[in-house]
Length: 325
Image 1 (spheres, one colour):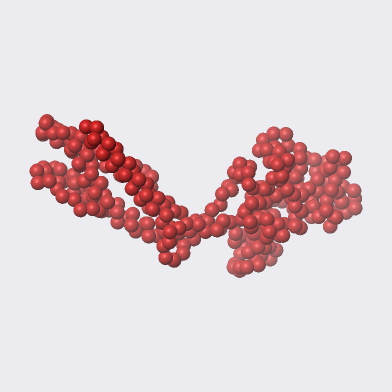
Image 2 (cartoon, rainbow, N blue to C red):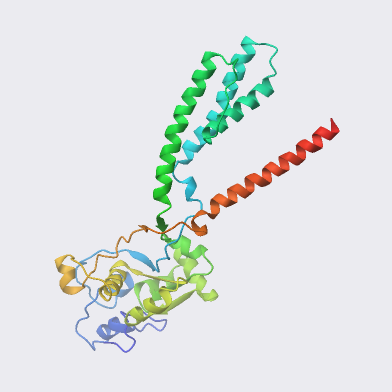
């Protein structure tokens, strides 16, 4: 093993560090990777034919299960909410148009407001009173609306009970751009690796942006040997992320899972890297059974308080207008 415990990069003086340095100085005959192949490295040592192609990925700590306080909006898709609002506007307008045709002297604004109020009461499952002078077509429109709201409210109630039991596990970083844009996050890169070489030599692009963050102390380096300690201390607290080739990160997840869990895995990884695929696709949501608390429902109370405040404001405006008139 080299003294610095790294794969190796070329220094400014032209010398090589790590395992590549041992081979280039003929202190070792062969070095076993996995090594990433670059043009600079190929000038110093001879590589075998590439055996594996890999990507660079981000390893970050999973967030704690959270409750979505606005979960009461999720049972219906945004498009459904939009169509409900459109229906509440168009149905009273349809009834106003028909009433104006049959009774030209009807006060259209008053009729529209009255009908809209009745349709809203039906949606909110409140008691309504149908005027005795309503025509049969008005009753049919109201009956169809009642049937539609019955289906909607039943579906909403069933889905809402299921959604309130769901905990969301946040995973804020899905790209390197999101990590760069978060000023509180520190990136950890492997010391004297191909990625460290890129950070030192790249002239433009997103990797150049990462390299510039080193001046802001948002980039630090660690050896492969220190990874396990880094994961257990820095990564888990949520402020650090590890950026490296996927095979290294997959091994770290496998080793971490091995210390606490067990299971069945592919033969190759079972004999070489136990539990290597278990953490590749962790669940984004989990279901729990617990009593509802304010943490689950505070979004509803915000809506209630906002509605009461808006009602109070409208009342004040009406009282003011009535005094003026």
